[in-house]
Length: 202
Image (cartoon, rainbow, N blue to C red; front, top):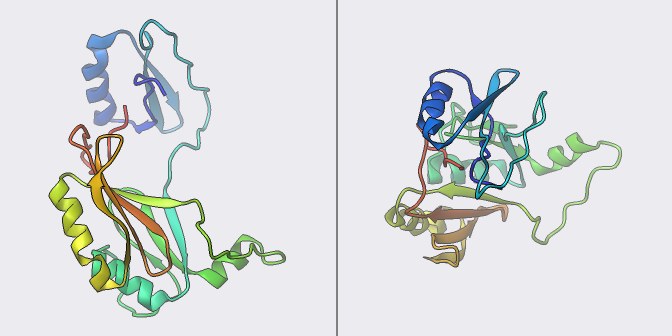
């Protein structure tokens, strides 16, 4: 994706600040889509034109990630007590949990109920192999990556790959939670974060 393509961002001061920052790089197009603006640099990259975003409502954000878990008590202890995900839930074995984490919200839900929720008549089968889904935490230093991995096994997780310098220039490792979901914890010195500690994608 060209660097000039900007995801939908909330209106207000953030948009105004962004527009001022981008003014020096060429004409700036601001397209309103519901409660959002889409901001684009009209020049494109290396003289190439860029595609304008279609008007209308865009489904281009992830609000919630639901993990179907086999043992709610064990998974809640892993995420809440082990990794430090904040939640108002004080039960040890609740029927559902929502975390008040930064960025995209995380939910835990019993796996057998999740497949029924998807399709009660013909629920999807649960395989034992890799699901093709990974979750990611973008750290702000190598030390932060290492700090996370030092406690994974002690809180019930499994290390899939210890952190190492990887081909794209960052520092990254993988672990699995008690249900086998893969988490990547990574850092790159070129990364920049917004006021919500979310990675800025340019």
